[in-house]
Image (cartoon, rainbow, N blue to C red; front, side, top):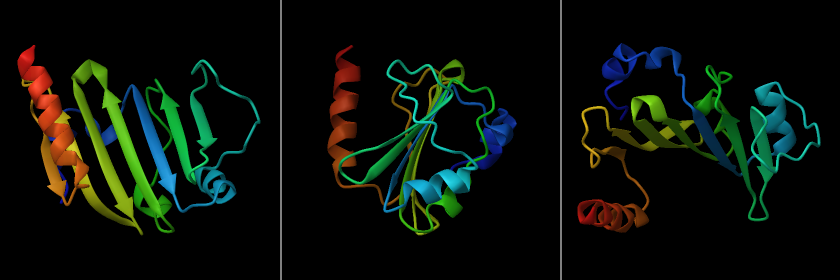
Length: 149
């Protein structure tokens, strides 16, 4: 189910260096998550996105984490962190024109979407697994807007 790992490694993605990453967790405990990441809650509010790492508990039971512009973000074991719930991870590497989103549930990769715009193809999407039903309509609308220019 994984995308072309060889190509990603060839481009230096064995040691992933994204400009930013978002991790959204559902069904996990914030204290347990912090412990698993080897972090602690400082109580500081990052209203302007200045900190390297920020975490927020949302009212709908989701926990959202952001790694901000780190050259080498902390190792996040996505499968292990999703053992007790769901993890949706989004990574963006602006300099390489590459982004991806992955969904893990109960320790398993369920689906992933990779955009590799290096060759100039703005519509390049590689989809693996069973994505949410909303994806088809979102993709169609985005492609339509892109074609309109």
